[in-house]
Length: 68
Image (cartoon, rainbow, N blue to C red):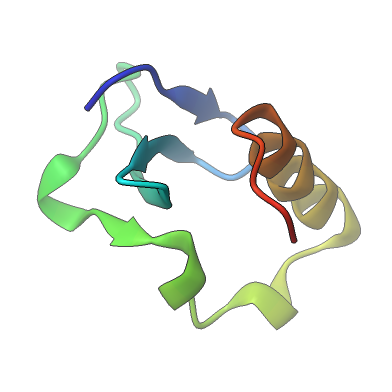
């Protein structure tokens, strides 16, 4: 994993892997749980995110220059 972003709002870490925005849960010590990584595009719960969480995810995508 190259540079990553940890989101306290979502409880996930994010990074790019071959132009794919990847994610995994973040442990309470701030380390990523890489055994449970998943592309954000495969998230099944996007419709269940709150407005704050959706905005956070949009900002993370923008930080990696990913279009919605």
